[in-house]
Length: 441
Image 1 (cartoon, rainbow, N blue to C red):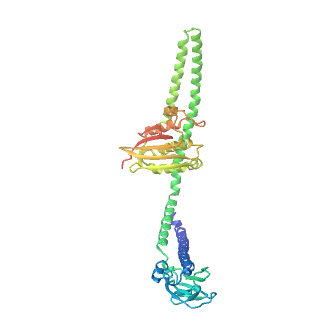
Image 2: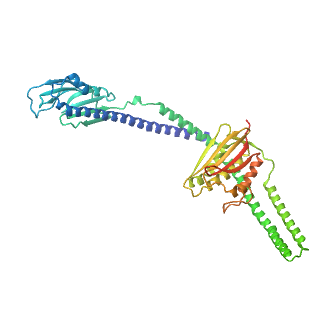
């Protein structure tokens, strides 16, 4: 399959690399534009603050103040001069040189030399930056270029200082980082190669899964048939025992003890018959000696979670796992252990039906030569009756249950040299503890 699909995989890889390069390039250009945009509007706010200071505080000065003292609060003011008569309606701004301009106060017959070079010098990403007054350049950094990729123009709305801030910039294509694109190309290559390898073994894995599921379903079907037959067969001796007991009661009531031994003997015979039926059932369930192997409970839990994905999703159950180092592998039969986990997790999910939210936790820790696996939930927990009879055949708290899940679980765990115990958590919820031998390296 790898040979048949390598060309398609290579074409998909090239397409994904191209789409990734375009997407990352667009994203990086947008990030760069956002940086330029933020810088421009930050500069606009800075200049607006300075112009506001100029129009708010400088008209209050008489012109006799110390320039050194004034510059501590208004560093943009570099000179103060007295002037003669000037029309009150005349222009308040007069451009000077190298980023400076005079701001007139005709009422006080004073003018102030304002320097805006410092905030403009601090912004370098633009290839062109200018502050103009009535289309006359007051400050300029860089040169205008035809067909600039990005352009900004913002009017600084101040009555006495109606400046316009302009800027231009182009993306620095050669400076766009190539490393993320190369890394993503490698990721796509690894992902596609992995998919091709998985497709190569898909058929074999599907066949193996079908054989395993067929074997499991066959066992469950056989168990169901045996259970139905056993119930049918046990019903007959039970009915006979009931009749013999009623007869014995009537004989005792009439004080006719001569026939009482025969009735009791018949009851004993039917009881032995029930015992024989149960033994036959046990023999049918039991099989030859199981071959144990190393089983990874992390992978097994993941498979069971996939099988129960619908129940977990519909019940709004949160599945949590915690496998401590050294406790991931146990000595067991993989199919049996999967059946056990499926039964226990399914029981935990069903116990929380009707709750707004539920939780099932699967945790493991190593204890000497054994691994302790704890499956807990946030449900109502086990009742006292359930703690005492959960492993009794045919005991169940569900109407649709037949009461063989937990007994079968216990039987399988014991045949794998393990133990199982039930308890309730102090804060509420059920806890099933399974102990199995650790898998040897």
